[in-house]
Length: 186
Image (cartoon, rainbow, N blue to C red; front, top):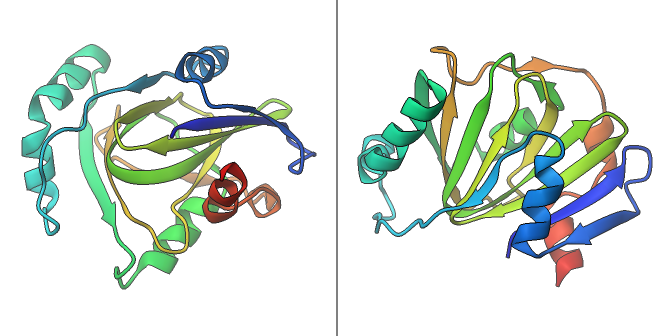
């Protein structure tokens, strides 16, 4: 189940929860974030590599490239056995911005995006089939959890792909982790 919680940036213990797709989409549209649910129906093997994932979703990727002028596409796939899962998690957990517009499509699994816009923080639980955009220069971070299990196609408007400018803020440490967030939903 996809979910959105909107917090004041100085009150991570209190937030307004949305679990209805239309409500999530409408709240995110207010801050220029596109949120859609696509069909993630391509069967991938457990060891599917980046070229296999990109080939399986090539029609959708081509449409997005044409629509937004994306110049870089990659796949990030992590599972609980990945030897560098902790390193990746820490990198993405640090609040950062990108100079370019980016889109993520969750092919498998889930992850938690935090978007820090003005005085609010938007926690977006994305699951299989969810597509989310992050507008250029939007402060954000991402938590994949202690035992990640996801495959995500990432699209960027610059040829360099994922290039982050870290803010140095410790705000991410004050908000629930993916694991805590999911536990609160249960």
